[in-house]
Amino acid sequence: MQRSLSERLWTTAVWAVVIFFVVNLFAMIGTVVLQSFATRWLGTWLPVAYTARWYGSAWDEFQLEDVLLVTFQAVGAVVLASGLLGVPAAYALARREFPGKRFIMLLFLLPMLVPPITYGIPMATVLYRAGIAGTIWGVILSNLVPTVPFVIFVMVPFIEQIDPRIEAAARVFGAGTGRLFLHVLLPLLAPGILAALLLVLVRTIAMFELTFLTAGPDSQTLVVALYYAVFAAGVRSTQSINAMAVIYMATTLLWLLVALRFVNPTQIVTRARREGA
Image 1 (cartoon, helix red, strand yellow):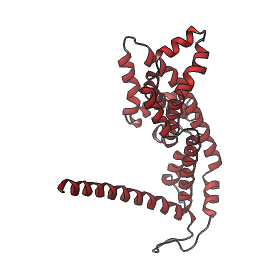
Image 2 (cartoon, helix red, strand yellow):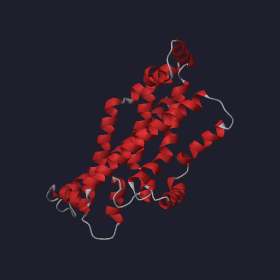
Image 3 (cartoon, rainbow, N blue to C red):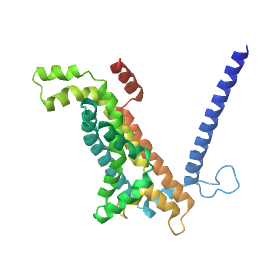
Image 4 (cartoon, helix red, strand yellow):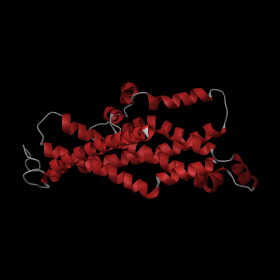
């Protein structure tokens, strides 16, 4: 009876924490969304009236058309380059044993463990001296520093779960390296690759420090533009800034929905377990 009571108390406490977190999360998001449509909201539970003109104001004032285009270009390039660089590197680390392998793995791990600001400042200094920072190429290169190692560490376990005898059998039947990768490895690794690139996509959209340090006036992503809208000099209406924040949230959600249209996290975990067995 005592154990049953303690289990009920523990379950109740867990659900209370979860509900408290969810309610606060939706309350904060709801406040921002309502504020982005409010004409005036002072001392009342709900705004006095609603309007959509703040979105047009934010779109024109913050040049969101150009900012969104830069964001899509930078994120797409980082995701593509991370996959092209990270997957082959992960395959080499998973299939080959060589001196210094542990040290190399440790080097790849550092950008994910160390706060980005600590290596972002010296990296930005080097990129500015090379004339790359301040452009979209600087934003892309700086974001590749943590994302390529991330893809490697996600992909290595997926590759290790594939029986090397499958590759050996494919080579026995005459498959070259290109055909082996396209027709044998790629279908088996597709869930892991899509999962890694999905996480890279979300990480790059939200990456502020490295993008802020290497972006110029014409290469700001949405998260950096939102920062400047809040903290840059000048007077800006709160509703316009909240409208911009809603556009940022909607853009991130859109990317996630597009990615999840092709990637089911449950299927990824299930398939990974099945292949590991």
